[in-house]
Length: 307
Ligand SMILES: Cc1cc2nc3c(=O)[nH]c(=O)nc-3n(C[C@H](O)[C@H](O)[C@H](O)COP(=O)(O)O)c2cc1C
Image 1 (tube, rainbow, N blue to C red):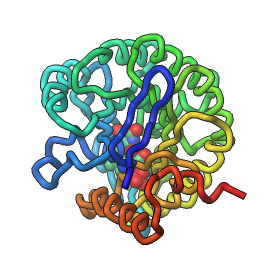
Image 2: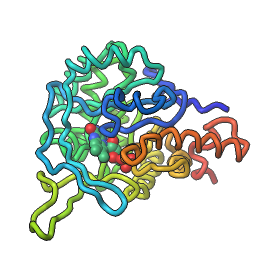
Image 3: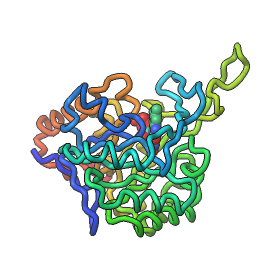
Image 4: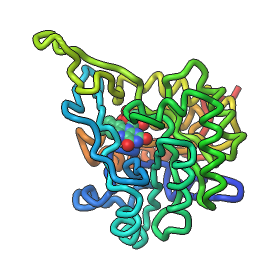
């Protein structure tokens, strides 16, 4: 059975052994999970979003539970690019599983500087541009909501590196297809849909927002139907590989995204409840393929779109 997928095509190819990745910010830098299960079985790992300089993140309270998901306002706490290169990339270079580094800048040029700093670093298989986090004080979602700026960030990074450049889109826009088209025109190798939906909750006893910074990002099963709809729309709009993300908890969820046209999927919030979720999703996809007599993922990708 062939589970391999090309998540970035053209001049900057990136082939994964299978389509199950883990989402940025929900798997840290991978080292802790390596103690819990065989992470080498994953298709790819996306690192916590990393900025040029280290960041301490938001004040607490940063997370809250919702009936079918969670709110987070971690605020991009991370070690910074220099520590990532010195301490983490050498470890990743020994791993079979490719590690994609998620980056964010507070200005267009800073995205380019991050991309340049990570170019040709052994252990870094690709970049994912976070132009979609609702928790960045500057950069993140505000850049991804403006097609012009989203395209400028993409072009700056594509110029600065030979690595495949995946652009992670925000659902907090009127037309995700328009942003998708602009960043692909600017040179994106692939897209990831979606980051969290901007949301909030209120403590009725304290009579104030629960999250210190008021707004947070909603993730988990609650957002899956929205993410699926957006993956469908983005796959209709562009020709590059699309990575589906949002609420994936089971193999059936993942198969829905693949059938909508996604080439791969990312599992995020579900790993907090059960760290083995990504492997369960992978095993379930294989089981489905065996049951259906399917030998390659090509038969599944976009299956729901065919007449
Ligand atoms: C605690 C937490 C931290 C996150 N941090 C990041 C991040 O640093 N960069 C990023 O691009 N997305 C981040 N995300 C968003 C996820 O990568 C993913 O896009 C989103 O949660 C939807 O997928 P899910 O429902 O499977 O979690 C974070 C999500 C959570 C729950």
